[in-house]
Amino acid sequence: MDEARSPSRLRWLPNAITIARLAALPAMLAVLIAAEGPTSTAGAVLFTVIGATDFVDGRLARILRAESRLGRVLDPLADRLLVAVGLVGLILLDRVHPAAPALILARDAVSIAGFVVFARRGVLLRVDFAGKCSSALAMFAVGFALLLDQTWVDVLVWAAVAVSLATFANYARTAARRWPRQPASTRA
Image (cartoon, rainbow, N blue to C red; front, side, top):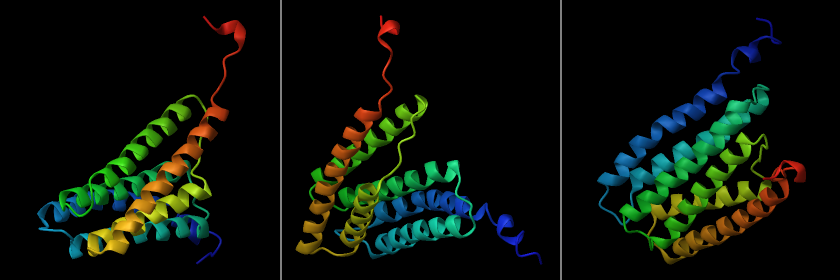
């Protein structure tokens, strides 16, 4: 087998894994809805397995040189939806005060809408390092909160809220600088 050609045959794999991650979210939500709370071991395991595929698909995309525009859109969307389903689960389980999940959910909804608005205007905003750290912290916090009912986990959840809001402020500042300006002659 020609080694130069074999990686190109698998270039579809990272996006397929991301799509599978999206397809698994309704099953995780069903498990969380059925759980009696305040935690759900099955929900935490599903959350962890689904979250681990984020590392796998990203690594494969780099190894196979299969990074794509679709992947740049779907991967962060899948991450945000995974966290969203986990946060909804925390509300359903009455695991943490609903304000914590609501703040992160609102931040993500506004961020996604903003990314779409900018993309339609031809400006592609990318997730920066701080945003990736914020997502990672939120994933860890949600995963632990689904599994454990302990004070240190509650602190971790609120830390994730604080970091999430701080990165939102950073994105808003970046977006304001990159917003396309109309020339003065075309304004009404």
